[in-house]
Image 1 (cartoon, rainbow, N blue to C red):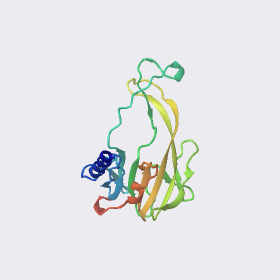
Image 2: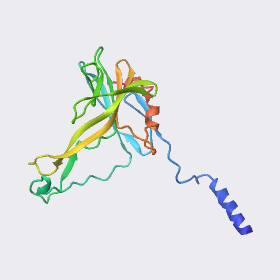
Image 3: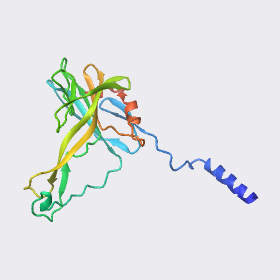
Image 4: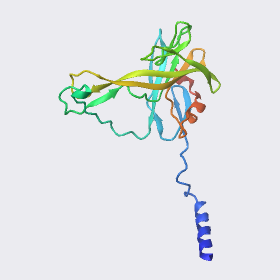
Length: 224
């Protein structure tokens, strides 16, 4: 009994030594600044280099994607035989889906005075309200809500996907079904909007770390 007690004391003491943290402790989120915004990212994510665009008519924009910090294995093509709508040479397995599941992305847009911003998934409807693009049923009304204290709109965008060949030049696409993505439009100022597509989620399946921390950054010169 005394030997068992001594071993238990040693284990308890070792668990409190520096560098012996529990292996299942989640890494802290990373603080990131991009396109004039600041936010926290759950562990395992990073952002791509921001891309800027703009014109006097459409306003200015700044875009970046949110991707896995550890790249996924390269996608492998599939075979499509005659029964699948494929074309010769059937032994070249190079079919891949285009316009498949969306990648988490952020688009910051500054609209020209008195005009609506030019966005990816949202567009103003005939009545002036925001709509979300839907390739199967036409543009659908967006739902208005409050995004962590800011006016916002949300919906699900639907796109059609197609199988295309990657190595054989002469081919026809094969319909691959519909793909959806959650989109959110947040208004930060009268002319400044942020469009979110499938924002990164925490382990629980909710956008808490990123969404709750999203705000205007200290480097206002980086805004569009």
